[in-house]
Amino acid sequence: MKPQDNTFQIVSIQTTYRCNMACANCYLGDMLNNPKYKDIDIVQFEDAISKLPRRCDIRFIGAEPTLADNLFDMIKIARKYKHRPQILTNGLKLGQEDYVVKLKNAGLNFLGISMNGGLDDEVYKRFDNGKYAKLKQRALEHCIKHKIVPHINIIVDPTNLHVINPLIKHVIGLCEKYNRKVGASYPLTIRIKSVAKMGNYLDTYSFNIDELIRIIKKEFGKFTNEKIIPNFMMDGVLEKNTCMVHFHTKVGRIGGKVTDWTVDDDGLPLVKSKRRGLLTEKGTIEPFFEYYGGIDETQSPRLEK
Image 1 (cartoon, helix red, strand yellow):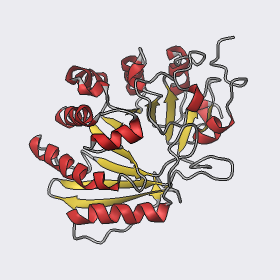
Image 2 (spheres, rainbow, N blue to C red; image 1 turned 60 degrees about the vertical axis):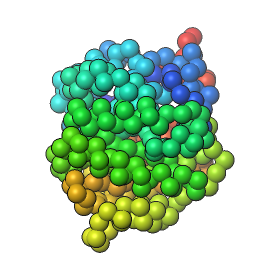
Image 3 (cartoon, rainbow, N blue to C red; image 1 turned 180 degrees about the vertical axis):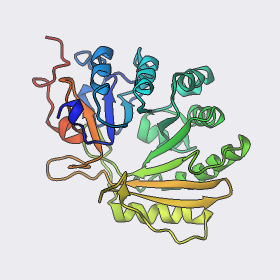
Image 4 (cartoon, helix red, strand yellow; image 1 turned 90 degrees about the horizontal axis):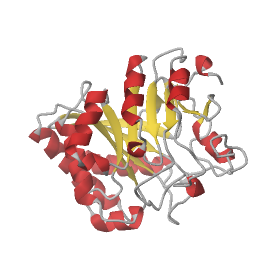
């Protein structure tokens, strides 16, 4: 669809195909670090989002968006048109406190950070092919210190469920340290999601939505006595693959989110989502995973001719 006809609440921006990690799970597959695929053109980006008919979440993704040379400018442009800029990052560059300050000054208030290993380097070695625990802990602290709301993403399989509870405790401790009251004004969220067997992925069990809900209830339930009721309404849209739960802790109401990334018969997760679109190389906005599922090296306009 044309940007002026957009109906998606989330518009994802593929900033770059470059990455500074080599994660075992990456839906980009052979497109990752492929020089044939170019960073987004900032003029095309501004032209598209200036036409969106309502306020949207502009989600800068990658590979790794912090490697995009014009990320700060794109965040400022998103704010210029009254949208909500976000980035989805592995967090490595956020280990540099001055970089986090620059993000904040550009107008970033929310980001998603992957922490598949929690505080455990051995898990990171399996999921992300490196020891990243200390660096990601620094990144998380810098975000909380400078009032950027982190949405912490954990891809789970049967081998790393033990990282969830210590990570929750660590997050609560950081919020106490910097006096962050979690809730409407600081909506910190921890999300667990199953392995999406698309692109590159671990050959492991992929939890379904019911299993993920049981897992998050068990791990978060240690921090609250309230009745935990999953909510499948996301931005006013009923979604069977994603739900939210909330937990009252001593630092406030932390969000718990679960996302079922198991794939369908066409090898795609989260199909027919009415919430998540992607700005394509042609300047149109299309369903996110359906677009990537159909793309190949003969179709992408971002390839060098």
